[in-house]
Every structure is written in C-alpha cells, then in structure tokens.
Length: 308
Image 1 (cartoon, rainbow, N blue to C red):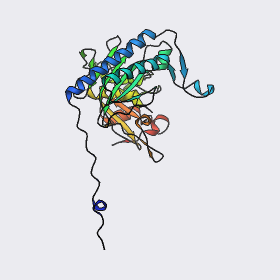
Image 2 (cartoon, one colour):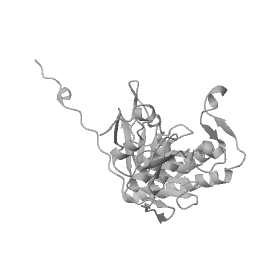
Image 3 (cartoon, helix red, strand yellow):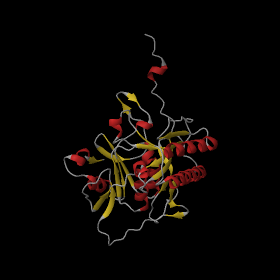
Image 4 (cartoon, one colour):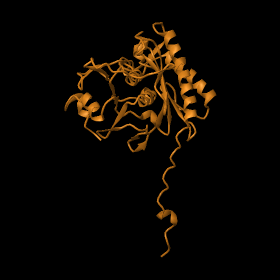
C-alpha cells in the first residue's frame, strides 16, 4: 500500500502571530487620531443647533420614525477623515459608519470611525454627542481618540490614548479620583433601569461618550447591548489605558474582551461591520460589574449568566 501524501499527515501550521506595533508607531497613530477627532469636533460644534439636512435609516416611511438619523455632518466628516487617511496611511483599512469598508494590507492598521456618535442628540441640539476615531491592529484596539461635547473638565475636548500609554484629555494626563463621600456612583446603560451594585443609571445616547466617561472616572461602569464596532473601538482603547475592565458576552458567559473578531452568521464568516456582542466596561471585579447590571431572571437580566 502506498504511503499517504505528507500533506495528509502534517497538521496545519499555526497562523503567524502579528508582532505588536512599536511604541513610536503607536504614538504617531494616536497623534493623527487626535487630529481627526478635533477635525470632527470642530464640524460638530459649528453645526450644533443649526439647520441641516437629516435623513433616517430604513426604506419605508413607517420604519424611519424610530430608526437612527444620519445628518449631512455625519457624511461630510467621514469623507474628510477618509481623505486625510488616504493621504497619510494609504495602505491602512477603514471601517466607517456611513460608507463601505476599505480593505487595508493584511499587516496594517484598521481605522474605525464614527463621525458623529449620538446623532439623535446632535440633530436635536442636545450637546451630549461625540466623534470617535479608533485604531485596531490584529483585532485589538491599540489607539483611540474621542472628541466629547462635554467632559470631566466642563468643556469640549478629546480624550485619547494608545497601547502602552496614558489616558489624556488634550495635553493633560487624566487620573480619576473617587470621592469616598459619594455612596452611589453612576453607570451608563442602553435604557434607564434600576441600579444595583451601588450605582444609579444614566442613558446619555452616545456609547463613545460613555466609554470616555468611564475611562475618566465620571461613570463607574457602562453596558452596551448591541454595539457597533465604530461605537466602541476608540473607547475600548481609552478604558484599557485607564486600567478599566472590559467584558464581552459569548454564548451566555461574560469573558474578558481581547480582540474584535468577525462573527459567524448562519454558517458563514462575517465581517467586523457585523460584530455586535454585548459589552460591559468599568472598574471593579468582573463579577461585581455583571451583578451590577443584573436585574434578575427576566427582562434585562435574562441575558446575564455567569462570569468565566
């Protein structure tokens, strides 16, 4: 009997692990992210409260009432950001909320852009909105810059960080300080719910803003039910730099978030644009964070099981 070909008996070679980016590269990427976040923030500030074109997602008028709005500012800002990235990093990938994905080189960075996060707030002139510029390498958020219409410093500005660096607001390092006299801290939620774990809950309408507020210590924690990657990629870089915890729900278990991975959908490998698992971020143990958002056996709590 002839021997089987060597390829039949040889196990597949493991995928080559991508080398982490050098710190000097991350510093430059963070600098550009801050530049782009400031660009977006200037556009938002100039347009807030003014008359602008607004459309709603959905094909039928009956569907559009409760769908997310898109303003002319969303589209214009993302176009400006994409043009700047095409000049600076033409080989990098781009995932943005308003336009199709741009594929980059296999070993390059992917920029994840939300030009206006909290658009419903924005088109109504409510200043709790943000612009988020995240940078992902090998699925891991390695840099982020989030322009916020409000901040711990009572002024608009950009929270930013990169892997191995400190959380900053503008040029200032951010070190959250907890007042021991405050007995009930705040937590961001998708919809107002009774708080547990010593929290009162708040809904800001902007996931990127809530990520920045958790990183800065304004919120103790936040939970997102079905976030898009552009909602939180930048924010996860901030909370990691600030020493916070990030958890992701997978098959009923809360596990540490490590990387963005394309999901499997009906037997096919999806794309990062289709990534939507529930996320919890905050300070404290994983068990305390999950318990803080668990309302019991029905409603919100039905999807919260055990912490791995």
